[in-house]
Image (tube, rainbow over all chains, first blue to last red; front, side, top):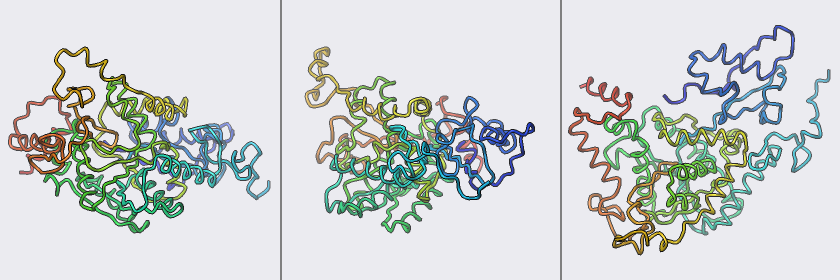
Length: 92
Length: 381
C-alpha cells in the first residue's frame, strides 16, 4: 500500500541521545536511531533502508546540502542541524 | 569556539562561481555547485532543450499535463519562468485529469488548484467519470488491481487529448524526466521490443493515433535535480504515490535503474543516449523473411506486431505504428482513432461486460486486494 512513511523529518525535532562511548554522533547514528525508535512497523524499514544504508531513490540533505558533499553517513552532527529525507519517487 | 558560520573550505566551493559553498553534486557530471549556479544551469539546460528542439512557436497555446506531483509542478513553474525570461510567446494552460482515485487524486488535485493561483495560470480538469462513466476506483474493483496501469494509461491519454481539444490546444507538454525515459528505454530493451525502443527517446511525438502532439522538455533533466529544485524553491507539490502499485515489471526496472544510478550517476543520460542512437534496420531486409506480407506492410513498419498497444511511463499510450490516419473516427465515441474502434472504447466495452457479470470471477490472476474490494463492494449492497 502506497507510501507507508513520509520521510519529511524536517518537521520532527528530535534529541539524539549521546553515544555511550562519547564519540561524536554521526548521520549513521541518526539513521540507526530513526530505524530503532521512530519506525514502528519493521516492514517499513526497507522503504527507508537498503543494504544497511539509505535506499537509492531517497535524497538525503544535510542543512540543505546534498549529503554526498558532507561525507554521507560519516557526517558529524551538530546541534540544530536539519536533516531531510526526500523521496524522488513518482507522484505521477 | 567562534559563533560565526564557518567559512567553507576551498575544496567545498562551487565549481562554477568559486565563491559560494557547493550544495549539490550534479548526477550528470558530478560537478559540485551552489544553489544559485544550480538554478542557473538547470533552467538554462531546459531552455536549451526547448530551443534546440524547436518545441514551441510564438503564439502557440500549450497545455501542461499537471498532476500536482513534483515533475509537473516544476514544469509549470519553469515554463512560465522561461516563457517570461526568453519571450517564447506561448500561452500556458494547466490541464489535469481526475482519474477518480480516492485518497490520491483528490488530494493531488487540491495541489494543482493551489498551483493555479500561485502561478496565475488557467486550469482545466477533465474526469474519467465524466468522459467514460467509470472512475479508476470502479475500474479497479471490476478489473483488478493488476491491470490498473493499463486501463489508466489508455484512458488518460485520451482524456488529455480530449481536454486539450476542449481548450482548442493541440500541444500537450508533460513532465517526463530523464529517469522516466531511461526506464522506458531499459524496459523496451529488456522486453526485446525493438520497434518501441527506436521511438522511445523522441522528445516530441506528433502522431500516434492522436491529433495532438506531445513533448517532454525535461527529457534530459534528472529526477534528483527536479526534486532538489522543487525543494529549494519551496514549490507546492504533492508527493504521495498512486495507491495502485505500478506494473510489476516497471517497478523492478525502476529499482534496477536507481541502483545503477547509485553506482554510476551518468548512466541515466547514457541510456538515453544509447536509445537515441538505436536505429532499426531497413524494413526491406526484415520483410523478405515473411512469405505473405500483410496488405498494408508497405506503409506500416513491422506489420502485425504493432497491433499491440504501448503504455508509456506516464501511462500514455500509442495506438498504432501506422501513424494517425486522417479523418478516421471511432465508431463508438466518434473520437479520432486510427482503428475502427478506439482503444478506450474497447477497454470500456470489456468493462461493461464485466460489470454485468461481476460475480462470475474466472480470472484467477487478479490480486487479492481487488478481490477484497469486490467483496466489500458486494457487502454494502
